[in-house]
Image (tube, rainbow, N blue to C red; front, side, top):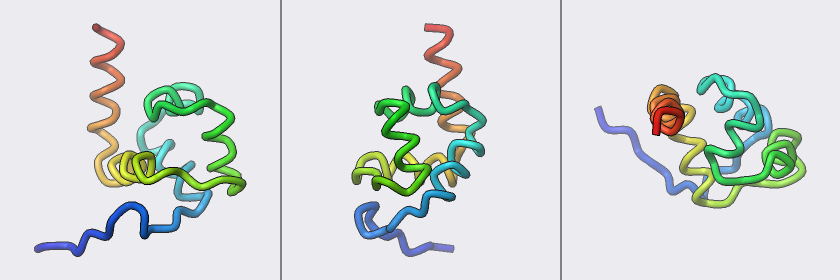
Length: 81
């Protein structure tokens, strides 16, 4: 069962999808922003629809939506390192 995967840059992210991705991972804004390598303000701007994530950030957001446990694993590994 192959899904057609669109490049991250061609997907327009809605603000609600960004907060949904964060909620799936189960992190507060500050921790999710740190995981993505952006400021809390940037994440807030994305979640409120004022700005759009870059291509790299969009890829990480897709991972958060499809495989939230992977990002949770990364945060737990960072905490023990």
